[in-house]
View 1 (cartoon, rainbow, N blue to C red):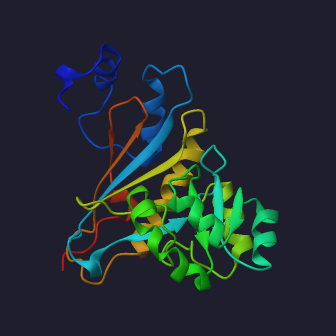
View 2 (view 1 turned 90 degrees about the vertical axis):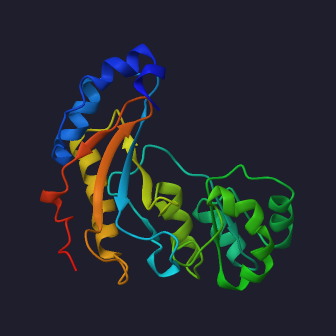
View 3 (view 1 turned 60 degrees about the vertical axis):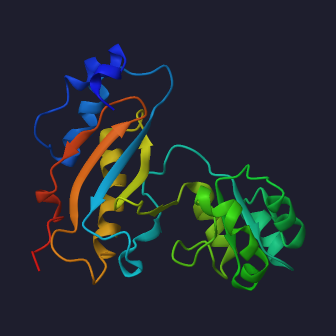
Length: 237
């Protein structure tokens, strides 16, 4: 969106955005110099990858437990049966069950952040793809939300483990904390995500893999991050 359509506060904040990318550690103090909203803004990172999103073998999807958390507790549900129902609830799941939970979600209930499932439940929840898919909540082995270790999955996602997947433009969007976090904590979370992404470079992806990184808060313009010192530039192949 052009600056001419932005509010006064956003325009003032835009004046603080450096002309050139800055070191990751320097980006968060700059965000905090911008005029803050009346709420604790979420801090986000956008990583533009050198992939072809149209190619299935270049899709990037996964999950990461950020070392400093994300500043909130996720509401997790578990599609499980038998003894795993009690296991999931004991680990913190807000809802756990089989057929009744599938029917509830299929009826339109989506008041949760993450859904986990055991492998034996996948045939039962396959029909939920149209409900959960568009919201990014469909359990997936790649994201670690389809697992036999229900207790660990529920605990980690409740504590703030995040999922990520590239969009149609080859970008990864993720939360790395709140504006009230210490600068070092925000940098630690961002670094953890970047490290995971680097290790997930698809074999079919050629040339520069991590092309651009930007961080921003809920109400701020983006600040470009210098990728050269992050080991993010891949040798041209």
